[in-house]
Image (cartoon, rainbow, N blue to C red; front, side):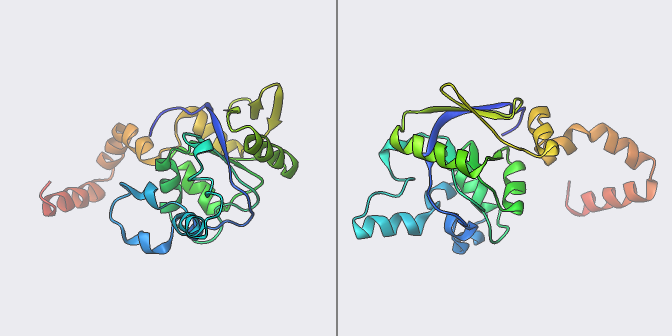
Length: 211
């Protein structure tokens, strides 16, 4: 999950409703997991099970028409609620590579950024059009062009407003803070060399850990 992200292509997965919080995306009981491996199996778990138990139409994440879709289409204030990073991790591992909606929880959008999952805000009218279009024609291909700031569906171009700082990090490939730190290792080493007290403390810590 590293590198530049300038474009995301795929089919849309429409998800109705506003104010879908992180507890609906991934329930709090999964926060005690020590690894994200396999967490995608639990995304929207209770809502998907409830739909099956009631004999309702399948939840969109279980709907075979949208199998393999990689662009999630949502409404207003998606990802509100608690700041758990498990929610974007579950969506990413499910196969979602971009989320398009009217607005997003701020912390959720930041957590998505740190794993390379763009949250792209569009107008309410355009968001509704995208969800309706993909619901009626699940084979519809979408292209989210980060550089151009637009989503392309056929001959229609829908603008999105991504904050410039986040847009630049996707385009430069600097959205992964750990990778940025590792790439700056020489600079960090030079800085440590210029600060002997800090370097000695770091070396002492490494020795205690047996490194």
